[in-house]
Image 1 (cartoon, rainbow, N blue to C red):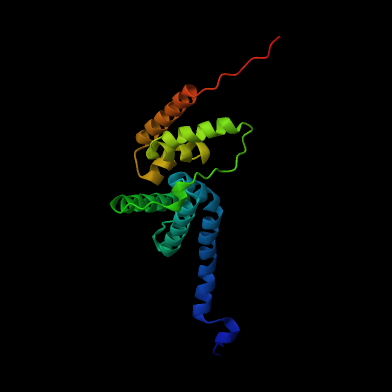
Image 2 (tube, one colour):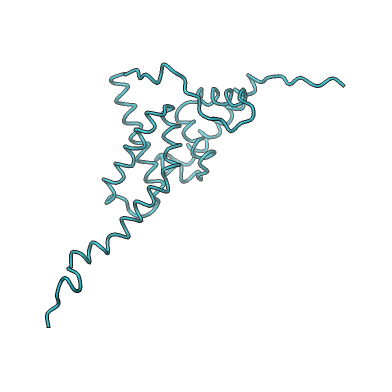
Length: 188
């Protein structure tokens, strides 16, 4: 008795159904990682428009190159893609400088802090950090990644991660101390 392909499904339909969970899993991982990638792209570019472009390029490249993902650490792989895209864009811009309209304006992000002066001082202190130190600081302190994960993402030795983080923290402490506002005491 021969099997009817409509009754039991053709072999290509069965193959597509077997691949569907893997594709959904990959796409679900990207969707779950979007908020973290958005924060990271913003910290790299310091521009809302550029960060959204970088995020879109990263997701597009991840989807196109999904066959290259080996199934180990998806976050590290995605962060590495974004880091490389950003570095390539910086190199390209260095060769052909372009001044964007966003650079003419300073865009303030919404604040959860009670003291806007303190928040502005912190933002200014972060802006003075070298890009490499700020990147490590964001990944370790804000995103909560371990030193080894950051080393893997940025493809640098773990000792370099530790020294960049230490220097970034020290620079922030010094900068915040330099611009310290003296608190007035209440009279008794």
